Image: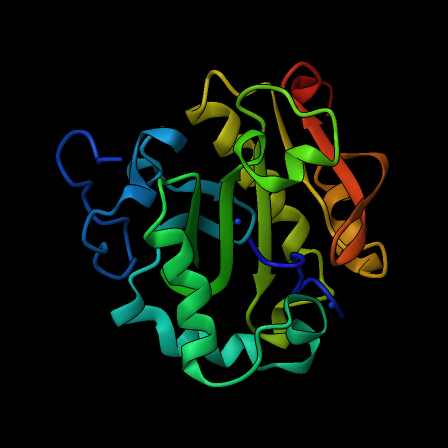
Length: 226
């Protein structure tokens, strides 16, 4: 898993069923991998979510198609300040491969907004992740890491809208998940603010090996009170 989620700055077995149809306007789907499988309720088949900026889809990463784009994002200073993955393509490729070659508990995705790839996401089983050692995890807790790729998409509320839509999508498609969590770096105040605006609550500070983090939680039980 990455050290933080970021990019909101102004800034870690088998697939069941048939391969999903491509999302409207999205790039062709990647070949099935464990990361698209049952630990996250077949994320590759999740439909797009409606947002004020247009339809938004999570498309599992295909390194052969997507690596150059993600490397460029990781090398932006505002992103690297929190993800710490700047460098040659091999650095980002190793980060992706650790997830794609794993058991499917973390799915790296492109966020495709109105047909255009514009963000990088990791949807992960927080209860199966190392982060579960640092907070009172519950079965099927689902976590989010993200970055917005382009500077023009930061600092104007887009991250908040996409976080809200993505949390709704997780709760809609993962009926056993009672809450969505995130752990942004406490220094990343725009990211924390975006989570708050998306209906997450600040639960507590937690000390992870690489950062002091804000544990953000969005409960299913409170979803319709937002």
